[in-house]
Length: 486
Image 1 (tube, rainbow, N blue to C red):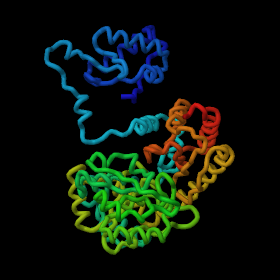
Image 2 (tube, helix red, strand yellow):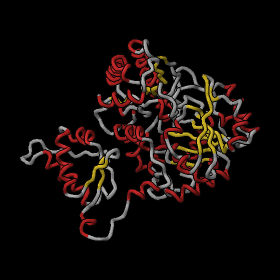
Image 3 (cartoon, rainbow, N blue to C red):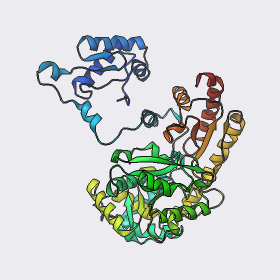
Image 4 (cartoon, rainbow, N blue to C red):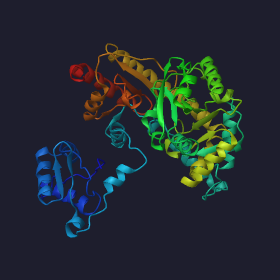
């Protein structure tokens, strides 16, 4: 609902309050805002419509007087009636109760705010985990599709596990990572998040417990929670997840599996050491605890390649491996893969066919072409070079402007710097303050609800000019408002 793009015409002879009244009334009587819908706050509406708050108050008072809205102390303003409920004795459907009873849990408010703000081109996005539009291979992608007249390109559905020729290319690509996987043990999915969704509904029971590193990207999505499962964090250090208590945690909490991002961890950027990988795999095999290995960042190394994936050492089929082209090639293609034992892949493929009947055949065709003839490998080299420049540029700004009130480690790859504030400033309040100045942050509480000290700073999306301007202004906000940020 907060995604409102309409604005009143300040050059119109119709008063602003009347334009706003008519717009809001239209949302109600056309059924877009149903009975029980909570409308945005007066301050929010004033910001979105770029008018004084008194103008909003005047418009809302008219709607309240007409019996369309009601204001409740402590709970805001909501839709009371619409034209149908005024004209008939039969009450309209209570869509609010439907929304509240849906099985898929809503994101926390701050993530919803981030998702909305990312659509605003005037916002400087200092936390966004994707490549800058200027780094995406638009011309090369266009050429691939222009060359399709030479190919036997199908626009129909593909087989349940995905385009076989693509799975062959993925199999060859994984071989360079030490992973032996036949096309039969690979499922093409619509990105890494769908891989997690399929696992949650296809393999696990309600009430199961998922172990994960803390902090973790998994806390920022509700894929397992919405399937009726619980998340339990396991601490990590600079070598990766601390594995000593995993076997005990499995027994105590009936843990179903462990989710890990061992390479360029999101959000901390940590790379699990080779020894830690071997020890973790051994402990999980002994405890019969399956592992989900999320490996979407491993091609983004700067100086030297990271250790091989856990899956490369997995001889017992204990690891479900998730990969994707979203972090290097294009987030919009929505193509990734799951690698695992064939019975598991067969099960997940069946679930996928029931949910979307297969990932886009056009996207699969494009990714297959990128994985052929060294195109993807060459492009990955270019992206690594560009990201390293951005990392160095960002670290230089941090050293110049943040040294007095923050600490960080320099990442060896990936997208992120895990910035810890040492000023006792609340990153939740800093998020709100920065957003008012069109600077979008990813505070640590997204990844660990108890963390109010960290920011995930991304150097992958914002331009050099935006990184400099946004970070310098952020440092000023921290310096000037620290007493107010607690």
